[in-house]
Length: 317
Ligand SMILES: [Zn+2]
Ligand SMILES: [Zn+2]
Image 1 (cartoon, rainbow, N blue to C red):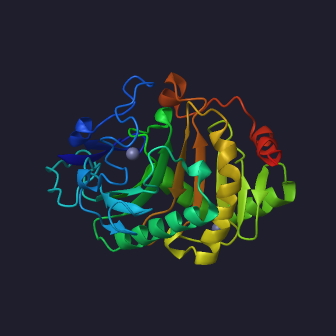
Image 2: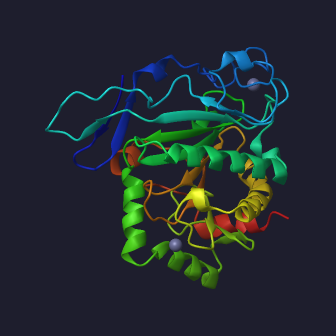
């Protein structure tokens, strides 16, 4: 049973997915790993029979680089039945799609060591899956993300992404959209202002800025923002994916080396399916962690000013 319920006071949605409590969790005691190397790991090359049948695979079994398959422990389900009636609270049945993209057949390879070509290929396939998911009438929002490291929520060490199409639009995304649109894309205006100021620009190339946002929630938080107003990931061009990969190639080792034992999340932030948004990527190092203050208040304590974080990234060469 999978269901989504809305908090009537804050507008936040919570997904209930009972089947996820049965999923394998590799980092049981942080140091001990369930899968030491490729033996038993469902994401390793040669172990293709341990996953659901692939939706995409760029080579024969044991000879691929990228592989996509439905998540065996999905947050939302394609055939989920309608939720029971409740007229007091807002809710929806957990209908949707949840896919896993494994971006390397090698157990120990991490994304901060990928070549630019590898990154381009991964983003190309993510975009293909994103476009396919857009065709589902049940999906109102698509979240693509990657957890790197045990304290960033990773349950299996082997590098992978998740693509989740859900039936509701998250409150944070809805708020961002409203503020963008209220001022004829405030995000575009923010990028122009940041370019003028310069102090929070970590890097840039022809198509993207890498900024440490003004009100960063996490220490060393980094956003990769297209210079052009791109309303959805589906509309990013092949040339722009190339620029994005070049920027990631140069910045990810810096993110990964902050604290290797903790990790970070890479999140593609889109708006509601079919709506206007300023698509971008948020990279969230999980150094600070969330504690009672953050959970209770929705406010964040960040010991690193974004201006200091930008300096750290600029110093890398
Ligand atoms: Zn593996
Ligand atoms: Zn814009």
